[in-house]
Image 1: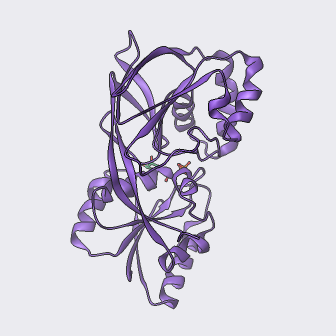
Image 2 (image 1 turned 180 degrees about the horizontal axis):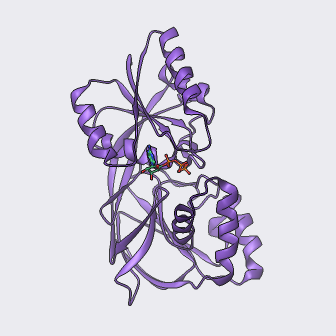
Length: 295
Ligand SMILES: Nc1ncnc2c1ncn2[C@@H]1O[C@H](COP(=O)(O)OP(=O)(O)OP(=O)(O)O)[C@@H](O)[C@H]1O
């Protein structure tokens, strides 16, 4: 693994990218590796990155940014042999946490020399690629407001969530999977290939990213008095213990919101409006990722 590309998002997280780039360059040079950098622009990045990868041979491509940058690189490498590494530089870094990738830049870089390659499933959500988590309902609304607001960081997210919670009206959903159908009201409905949000909320405990299946994790409407208990359960892997939650395991699902032609969906942290039904399918073991070696 000698030729390495680092795809850097100049605006992700709250981190000085020039010093990170220096650190990556010097670490690689000192240990006989060549690091090249590819800066994202926020416009047409997928097409440009794919073309760059066709024209240049690399041994691995690192996503150096947040979940959106990871989504971009994962999409470019999906169904390819080339493995993806992650240098977590966003505010949430959900997928890297799920895969046990160190959150410290130097430790994450060490995976160049010591790693195993894990093949993980990826999802298609309404025609959009997802490597981590997507959802409909409350969190999708907050992610949309967050993007509109122009502020970044976990503090701004929590402020928005508290404001919106007070006036939030849960919607009715119908989820038809390859195994069962569920219809009912939900506070939010998460399409989960992975386990944990970047905020450390465990939405899909004891799940696997390489089993060819994903979960639809439903949080039903709950009274305000139940909120602290649900939050506690979400942070302590107790999702299934609540009377307000359920999980459907499947290989595909079709989600409708009766009476709505369009629905808010967040996919790997990006807010989208998708037409209904939202069709979700899985690409089993379609992405190769560098993770810490098995202990
Ligand atoms: N040069 C750029 N200028 C403006 N926006 C950019 C640029 N490069 C990428 N983007 C946008 O940045 C977003 C992805 O950001 P990313 O998820 O990597 O960081 P983050 O939002 O800070 O982290 P996290 O997702 O962990 O909260 C995408 O919407 C992408 O279009």
